[in-house]
Each structure stands twice: as structure tokens, then as C-alpha cells.
Image (cartoon, rainbow, N blue to C red; front, side, top):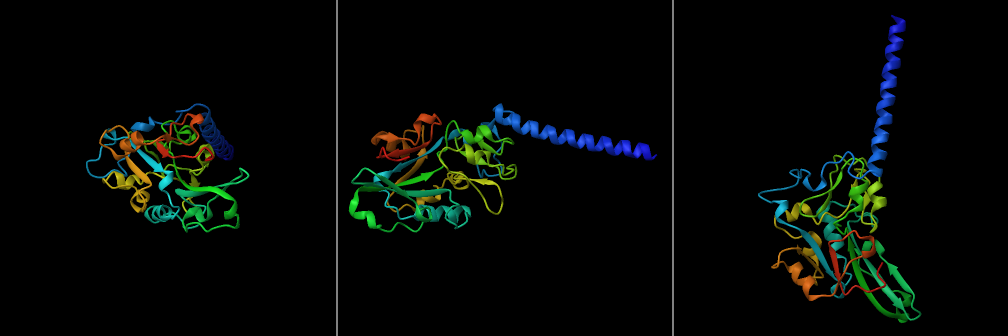
Length: 266
């Protein structure tokens, strides 16, 4: 009996080790082979957030940002934090504002105190500034999102309407997506220990509402709408302005479009 008990314990431990090693292998393989362990991201069930008769297949969302209209007031940052329960601590933010100052000697100064939420104060270098402007930043909702590619459990996925979301019930807090994002748009929530980022306020747009940052902007520097519908305000914005995206050389195909974007912007 004693030998049988020991044999059973050994088999159980061996089985546990196999499961553990198998889990590690699956995680590493999912990083090396995109799509392993993941369902089709664009067809993933999002009923947990969709309300009413909203159909993701009927939409394709994007956002336009006019640099010339941003005054750095920080209302968009504050509105986003309140709408999405983001901690008020500055380094946890779904959207932020950077100030660019070009000095006489060609030096570029970039700062974002409190993520821009409390606006910006004049600095001692103001006399040497040739020009200054503000750049709101946000998750770029890439058409080819690197964050989706590296997620080992499919917690980060892309919906049929082009929005990249995170299912917090699946997220294991591994930080792979945070490291993979070339725009620095993700963070690990200090309480839930899961990844977070901008979702275009998906819980609002499925109800026909604009994202909180768009609604709060006093100068209409942010324009939200459909990319493929001619009557969309975003389509008009794209047609009427010279448009650029951040880091186009990465081929992520961002769906956040900038008008009057200066070449110094990183």
C-alpha cells in the first residue's frame, strides 16, 4: 500500500510538471508563432460590452487630431480618467498631451507634466523658444497591432470595427503587449494588475456617443468618426487636411490621423 501511495504521488507530481512545462511551451510558442492559442481576433465575441443593436461589422472607427487647435488645456486627459476609472496618478493614463518647444539652437524640448492634465506652465527657456505646440497622444488603434500579435492568451484582440480591446478576464498581466506597443500607449493597472489602454471609449461608441476626450475638447482638436463613410466628419477631416500618422515606417497602419503634424514629433 505504501509503495502504491508513493507511486501515485510520483505520477501526480510528474503530471503536474508536464502541465506546467506544457503551459510554458504554449506561452512561448504563441510569441514565436502568431495566432497560436488565439481565435480569430476580429471575430472574437464582444457581447460583454456591446449594447442594443450595435453591429461591429457595420462600422470602422478612427480619430483625427488637429495639432494647430490643441491648446494643452488637459481637459481630454481628465475626462478620460474620470470616464474610464483610470488612477489619477500621472503615469497611469490612456491619453496624454506632450508639449514640444523648438529652441533657437534647434534643440527640441519635450515634456508632459502630469500627462498634461493640469495644463502647462511657462518655463525659463521661453525667451529662447522659436515655436511651441501641443501633441495629444493615444492608442493608435493600429490596423496591424503588434500588441495583438504578442499576447499569449488572446486577451488583446481586434474587433470587426477596427478597435483594439483588452479582455481583463483573460489578461494575465505578463506585460508583453506593453513592451510591444511602439507608441507607449499601454500600462499595467496598479489594482487589477491587467493591461490597460485607450479603447476609443468603446462602451460609449456602441451607444452612439463620442469618446469622452472628444466630447471634452473645447477647441474641437479631436474628430471621431467612420473611416469609410463619406458623410463622416472624420472623412471630411482627412480630405481637407494634410494628414500624417506617428511612426509610419513601422507599418502598423494607425487609425489615429494627425493634421499639421510637425516633423520633430516622435
